[in-house]
Length: 112
Image (cartoon, rainbow, N blue to C red; front, side, top):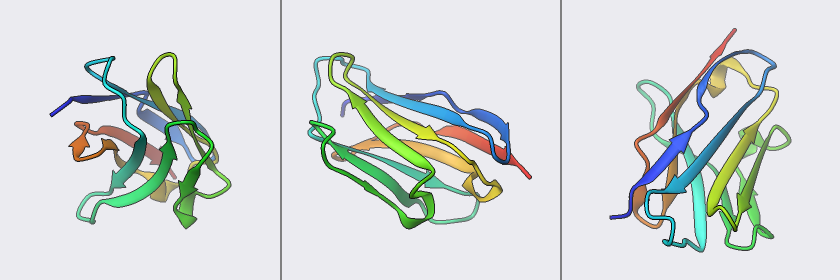
């Protein structure tokens, strides 16, 4: 029941960039695997990207490959999602996940 906190959301025009970050409320907590998910209004939550503890292993959903980059700062115990070339369809609430812990979600809005 560790709380995950997302930050960095906002509104951007298509083609722009945003950077999301996620950190546990209890900094000492360490997760070997962390992921990003997103959910558009009225849609199912979908997986976006995953990263392992070392950052050496990553995985991306096809719809973000080449545009999004997931990374991890071990010292700060944070996970980051760099989102470039944002598209209107990227709009939604983005969630950080580790094990069965979910963040509250943060809004990302991309204007057409």
